[in-house]
Image (tube, rainbow, N blue to C red; front, side, top):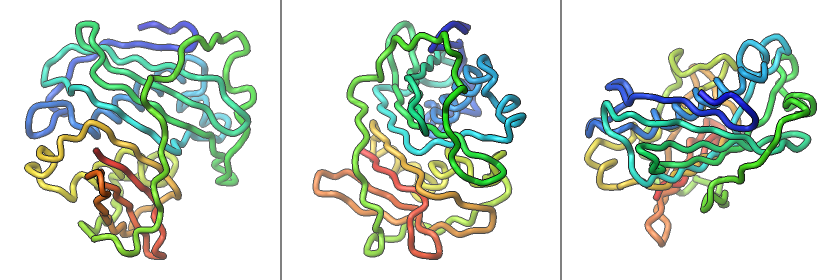
Amino acid sequence: MNSVGCRYTRELIILPSMCDSNSCLSIPAAFDMFQDTATLHADHFDIGPAGMNRRNYFWIISKTVMHIDRRPVMMDNVQARTWIQPADRAKCERDFALYSDGRELLHVRSIWAVVSHDTGRIVPMAGLYPDDIVFDEPAPAGTEFTKIGRDFADAESIGIYTIRSVDIDLGGHMNNVNYIRAMLGCFDSGQIESMDIHDIEVQYISQSYEGEALDFRIRIMPDGTREIGAVKKDGKAAFIARLS
């Protein structure tokens, strides 16, 4: 563990519970690994779950982009590494990379904010990071956020998912990674394998709650990229993604 400054690392083994049908680290498990590592780092600065709970705050992610070069396989030893960028008034950036034998396997760029349990609104970032922290590592190369259209009215429906108790996190809404699980669950294993996903961008637009139904809809772009929206009863997308 490296618990100094803007970065944090930990050693991990890819266990069976993290793997897909091909014995590779699954895409949702990779996102889980990122969020767990981020939480451990945040806890070092007392802005992990306990520290935020005392403030009556919780973290949310607004958007994430992941590039996958190679996914590790079951029982591989890997190093998970996360680091943070300077925060502005209302949001901050956190990055992540996974390594095996010194080779980068995947990297992530993400934007976070802090929400008040009392008001449900975003609160200022001021004072959350230590004053003496040194931000000396840039974001991963090639991880620009893109514009994904939010209107999926004319897109093909690929599955309806009703949010269950197991999807809810401490914020009282659907956990970020469970949108990704539900989305990928609209495809069978053969389809996912043939898609050969190396880049996945996700954006969270509004919160969803237990009992709500999400209509996952897809459109195929001219370059073959798949854009997917999780559409709520009011016709608006709560979650959008791009897979390529």
